[in-house]
Image (tube, rainbow, N blue to C red; front, side):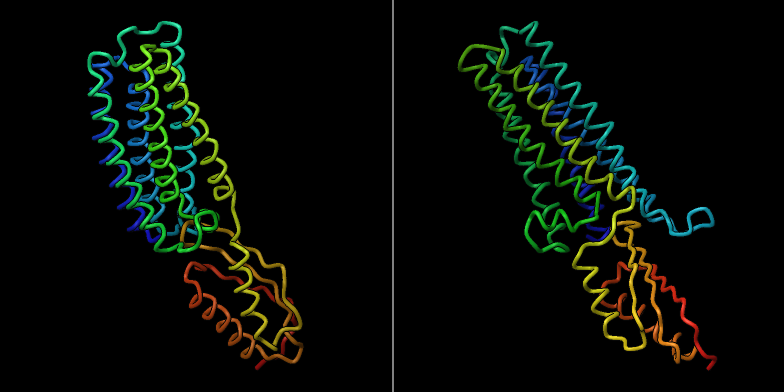
Length: 307
């Protein structure tokens, strides 16, 4: 996804989550629902996540420097990792804590006096979250039109992926809250509301682990997909000037930036001028096929004749 698409998805999610958080906390204050309080915490976390992702997107656009010769593209991966580890884990812990507290000390009037507050906020939140998720997914699919699983695997846009995962978790969390407050009301037992809070906390922790794993590989230095490698090999196979080539190494420097290194052995009778022309042509073809290959280095140990 282009950076602009990522930014708009994040901004949309921030606005939606902030409005939803206010409604959830108002509902929690009227009803005393632990599930609604946990959902309010969930939305505040999602809002904070969006702000951190915006910071990461902005910093990742900084150009190359002496200290960072390949630019700052990995900033977005760092901030996505921060979101996963600290924010989601913290939110999950708070939600579980609130649930356990209400299990040990249940409020007997949860949801009875103002049940319509809970239902109104949950349904409204589902509409907002659903719209935000739909927009983020639509932007994501513009660049990755393949199946859902393969799209997530191929995508290196941590910000967009984080928003999709975050909004999906939010929809599941709202469903858990709906079940919890409904059971607490209709069965006249507040323990179900507390259980829903614990379930929301576990959901946040599971989301944290999933996002951390996805971002970890990119932060360390994940290579390109098999399809991209095949494209590179197909292009190199077209050149008869090689004795052989190999040791192809790639690394994502950002969502749309890839470092590529290739070792080649040119034929002994190749002149320097011819070698330069071949190398230039290879780089041009690869970049024209996929512009994300921004840094291409071709190393040769061949002995060539002067032109």
